[in-house]
Length: 344
Image 1 (cartoon, rainbow, N blue to C red):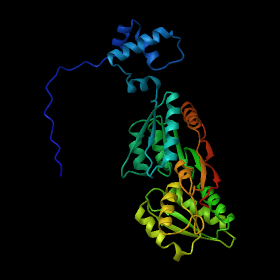
Image 2: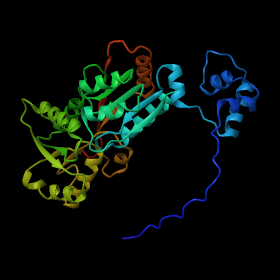
Image 3: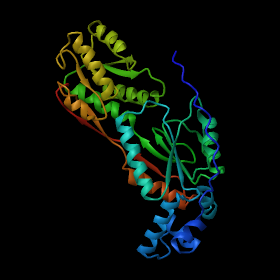
Image 4: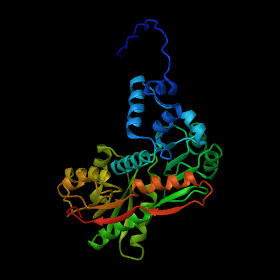
């Protein structure tokens, strides 16, 4: 084990005073109110651009930043939007969605904070989030229940938004039709002549909120037909994919909906290593429409998912913050379109 040496104790130094808005005002030659208007981006007061530049330059020179708590007291609420880290492995599509949302909220002058909790779920997680007194909370998946929503609202959260397959009482909801993803992928395989279809169900914790309805949708797609659906548990590990590929011929399957593109690429490589032809012996389709799937040979068929635009969700948060008593909004999102390529 490598020992990390302790650094020597720091030399005592004179305490440095924290710069204040009064210091900025003196250096810029303006009032403290003007400093507040400029640094808090207040649009209701007309201030010339040269004055704004002078205030910002003075703040930079002094190293001054506005005090978030004091600003919250003046406004009656914070500008913090809390985004709990998802309890499931977040792929590239979800990460791009979060990045766009953060940019859109930033343009509306909200501060976005991602909050990670390990081993804390449900109402206990909501209490941890509430301690930070956010003005809004965007909770992914099934991390929140009605009591958790009430805890957040009592702590001052004006907007609580959930993203998942089901609405939560008291919260605004972005409803994702995961069953539609499974139906579309499986119907595509059926229409291509496949009748013994496997559906990958990730073994990783937290993904069941997505994989279970996708499996249900796959079963719905072949109800009343001569096709069958077989559930295929799979860990996102090369070894597990190799073991599943080794059982492929005894299983008698001729196609697979592999949950998403990442699992599809993992399994497709394992099937090819086992000597199976794609799509001859096994047609493969994923979901998310990742660029890497278009670079494979054969190119990966997929379900293109359309998540809500960051600016639209940011506008929903802003509406709720300004009108916290409004009835919760419900919006169906996650448009799903099958993209046929060579792997199916």
